[in-house]
Amino acid sequence: MAQQLRLTAADSDGALDASIQWSAEDGPEPMLVHAITVPLGPVRLGEQSDDESVLRLHSIRFDVRSWRELAGRSFSFRHVVREIEAEGESLPIYDIYGSLRLGDAYHEVIASGITFGRYDGCRVTATLEGRVESIDHPPGFDPTDFTCDATLTLGPVTVRGDLGSTTVPAAAEAERLAQQLLRTDDYGEPRDRRGVVVLEPSC
Image (cartoon, rainbow, N blue to C red; front, side, top):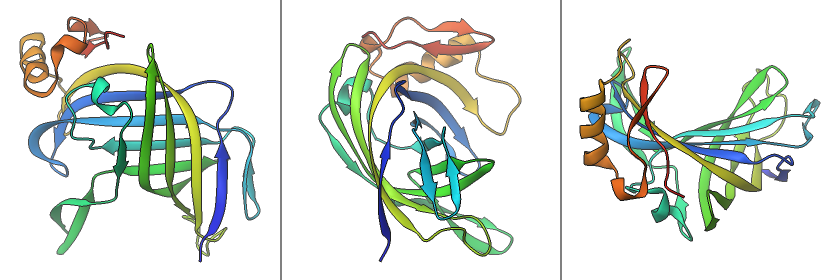
């Protein structure tokens, strides 16, 4: 049976960002994926500790078209969305990935659920649940189930395009992708940020 841990968020807000992207691993069709970053207070697991640990969840497939559709909802994970062939093996691709930084190490996080509260402007509360497993050999700590309550600030949607390419979609293509995948009334006009198109939430 896994140990139980309540992770405490730091005083500063976490972030809820999104991107429009595709890749050889995720599949050729453009999709909207999200990422959550939560700065934490002191964390200790086994003999490893960090006073400024960070919990990250990424490649999250919520199956929504707007940040507004997350409010008050609960999502469960970890589902296999497709299989890929690599080095003669069939490998699963999941609907969420994550890590917990302790010192210089990024330990594996297997997220099981996310529950959102209601928005207050561009901020939303969320409860994250899952398990963290040591990447060390032998393991530096036992598998540990966690719960983390956090406040997240809503970030932009970044149109990244093909993650295997060195170029990003031009403005016209980025706008087409946004129209395809987003409820655009909930976002501002697409704009350039250091050569990449982003859409800020209208909150």
